[in-house]
Amino acid sequence: MRRTLLLGFALVGTLLPLPAAGAAGDWAVNGPSRVRLISQYRVAPANASGAWLGLHFRLEPEWHVYWKNSGDAGYPPTLSLAGSPGAVQGELRWPAPRRFELRGGLVAFGYADEVVYPVEARLAGTGDREQITAEVDYVVCQVDCIPFHSRLTLDQPLAAPGGESADPATAPLLAAARDRLPLASGNLLGLPEITAETGFTTSPTPVLTVHIRSATAAPAAPAKTDLFLEPQDLFETGKPVVTQDGGGLTFRLPLTPKQVGKPLPATFPFAWTATGLQPRGGGAAFALADRRTVSLTPPPTPAPQPSDRPVRPLGLALAAVLSTLLALGLWGLLVPQRQGAGAVRQGLGFLAAAATVGLLYALSRAVRTEGLAAVELSLLAMSLLAWLRRRAAGRGKLAWALVVALGLCAGAALWFAVQNRIG
Amino acid sequence: MRRWNRIARPACLAALIGLVSLVGTALPALAKGTVGETAPAFSLKGLDGKTHALADYKGKVVVLEWINPNCPFSNRHAEEKTMTTLAAKYGEVVWLGINSTSKESRDFLPPAEHQAWAEKNGIHYAVLYDDSGTVGHAYGAKTTPHMFIDGKDGRIAYNGAIDDDPGGRKPKLARVNFVDGGLAAERASKAPEPATTKPYGCSVKY
Image (cartoon, rainbow over all chains, first blue to last red; front, side, top):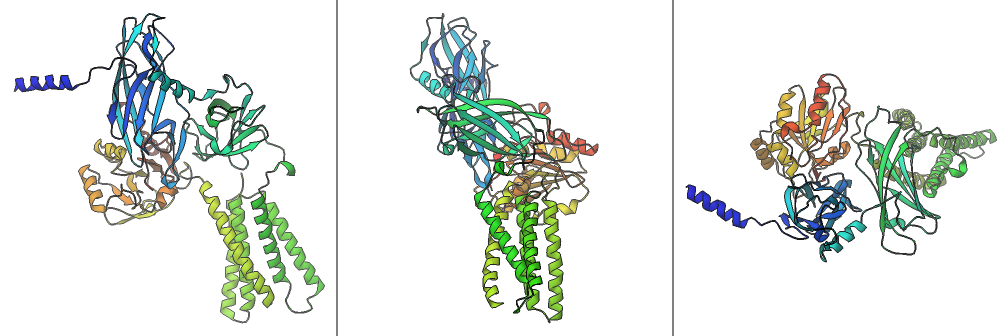
């Protein structure tokens, strides 16, 4: 029995891979994903604080791993170097993510196919070797999600400063990954013309606005850009709307408080990453990140001037058509269709129609769009019922039922208006 | 009169169609699963063949657990007895599992297999089928598991993760279980703190 056990241990011992030496550890193969630890150096400078390591993933088609905000499902990978024999320290950095739209309106933020998460590390070894052990937890998702834990190792050869050498295979991988890291707004390297402003508005619903301006050229075509928020618990976020104007891009990210009946804090730090920005004069796309604490209780703005109210042509046209229909409907009802209707009734009909249009305009400033639509729907139903009632005149019970329905519709219009008040 | 009808009828119809589509496009912007809002009502058929309606539990605290046996996160919590232990600890609470997996998804389980999985893991609370996804969307359920506490007042009191350990790597006692904290707060007639967290796990297979 004991001999069998010993034999077993010996076998396992030979099967276990020895820690890989050099610039890349062994791949840990986990279902549709494989992951390894890489270093930019074939031989690293001893006691170097600015060494770059990387967490290198390769995924089967359609699978993805996550950014620091994973979106609706999943979670970001975690890395701990605490199990290393030496005092290696390192922190995961996050390349610009992309958006995956899932069934049911859910979204995921992350990376497909292949990604290297750069790790800004401090190698503390003084000998000729640095043993690096990384405990990695991550989840990989396609339609299904599978969580994995791996212990990754890398045996990094060291040399006295000056004796280091880059690895021709992993150094370019890491360089490319670092190029995908967002630039900090305060540290724009060769792009000083670019500025970013972060704001928050609540009219009519909460929106985070990020305006990225370039003095000389638009930073990107809106279709290629996206905006991502770092994890926060205060708001559900929608999909950003990007518009291009003059020298810049404006992102408007709809926010919905996750809790009602509890006042929002006075200020809140928003950390965003804008991706797919294009430097002026061409070149590789880049991402920009910033963290700004903005006031969630902006001072009451003066009544909006007609000129700076956003005009939505489709909505305006629809409102105009609907209001005209309603007005015509009412006029038609009030003015008898018999020949020779009196001028007084004609005039009253016109006044009623004009009053309806005025009322709807007033309502549109106090009631949300969907509420207004429901009100107009109720009013239309009323005119339809009134018309039916006139046709059914003389048939007692039916006429009365129509009057009751008329009353219900009037109540519904009022109810919808009250339910959808702004603010 | 005739001429008027000829204009009015198609005009009314066109206006109706326009309005309905306007309302339709405006709806997805509304908040879902917002803490403090009235908990969306539902009536769903369970694995037990009975129909369970939220209205049946008026005045009680109800925990909703979005569940999918084919999701490794739901399965881990089932094997670790996270949910069943908590349901037993708070006997006064109604615990309901809701599976919003679409019949078209390969994760969909017929009742017999679902029941076998529940029994294997000692799950005796009702698990309801929502394969149309209606209730999942009404609550804004995103992941399995995604947890909601509907308070005694019929409002959503908690929306988020079961605990602070997505990878399940911490010892059980070191985990912060948000639903445990939320139910203790409900028992003491207080509001759960935190009331919202980010749920983790597989996406709901709508």
